[in-house]
Image 1: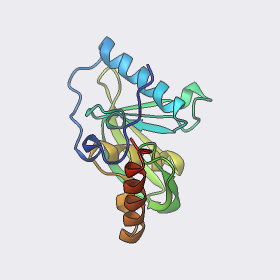
Image 2 (image 1 turned 180 degrees about the horizontal axis):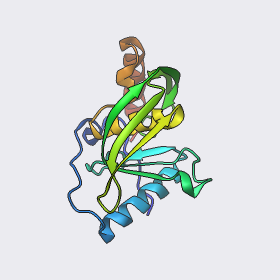
Image 3 (image 1 turned 60 degrees about the horizontal axis):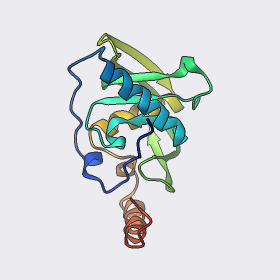
Length: 171
């Protein structure tokens, strides 16, 4: 099932998501499959459960955008345990469509998470994958990439979104 992506302004995007306590269930398997399908439909490389209105600490990532099954990553209850280096790059978000800004992020990121069966694992990524680890983990803590840009740029984006809301073109 393809979920509708929740847009900036919805409270679920700014709240800390709830941890997963039950693993290896048909419901969890289905939610993760639906998250990948929703992400691919929206042409994203990552999707956090709050972005589909579900306040759970789950994120899916695929930097190949569906081209390589081996690149599919599921992060349940993730935490960033190490970062190094710096990279600047344009970043967008499925919940803030139509807007992109340069954001400074670590160049290498190690994440610790659980898989669908509840087993803990660690994974290190660099460049785009590092950016995705941080971006999606931030979503699970109620933080959006626009919090990393200047106040001026952030206010400009918020103003444009308010205008789109008034015109009925956002939501």
